[in-house]
Image 1: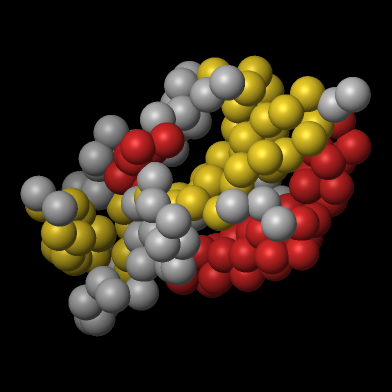
Image 2: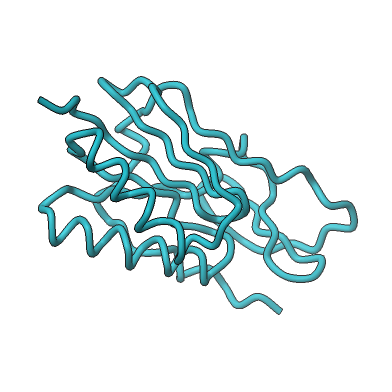
Length: 153
């Protein structure tokens, strides 16, 4: 019998990171510098051979719109096909609320609960980190990408 786990995907920048959680505790980590569109199906297939996946979680933005779209379409498809619930939260949960690159010198910042763009002269560290413990209360069943962010320009 396969171990029951939940998966968390952070695909907003390279390397993409996938955390495997058992009883909300991180038990395995997968990292890849490959394009998420190429590697997500391979990693997912490998994980389904090792684990019984119960829930899917992902960072739904802000960040690279293409990376967000690829992750959402892939994870939503797996959610529907395999009847696994999909949950999402914003990426600021995984980088200690640091600015996230938008375009040029513009960065996404989170002020209170509102995400905006700001011009920054110095580029902050943009490291995303998988949490050691998955807090289910920080995720929503509204899993669509964060497209309601104002225009970047």
